[in-house]
Amino acid sequence: MKIVIANDHAAVELKQIIASYVSGMGHEVINIGTDSDASCNYPEYGEKAANMVAAGEVDLGILICGTGVGISLAANKVHGIRCGVCSEPVTARLIRQHNNANMIAFGARIVGSELAKEIVKAFIESEFEGGRHQLRIDMITEVEKRQK
Ligand code: RB5
Image 1: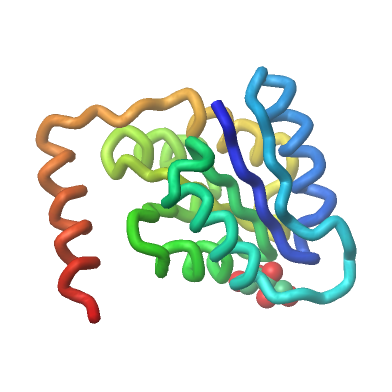
Image 2: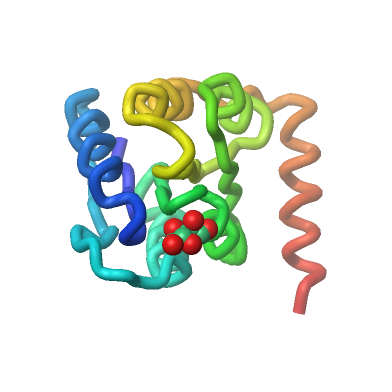
């Protein structure tokens, strides 16, 4: 798969670890996050990565900031993006299986690198189950359409 990864200054080290891990799994990683510790603004990175996912340029996206929340909020403003913040692998699996999440976010100040690898593995290796869950995904899309 082609996977975009983006991060702010709070997550440079963890991003590098996760990018290596994901490419070691055999995926193509596109790193668009900062590689500097200089303070920057996570919405810019969340939006850019989300636009790539929404446009179909990549299959999935991984977002990392201090908590995972800020960057996920920005990504979820892009139509077609379903990004969940996860601090453990069970949620990471379920957001794929039930919510058809196309992006995942987590916090470099919240999870350690080994747990982050498990989270990412669960997310990438799980598949959407469809069925009754599709109706709810369609309802989320309808919410987007009702927004101005
Ligand atoms: C940056 O200090 C921090 O606010 C950011 O990484 C993130 O945690 C926001 O949600």
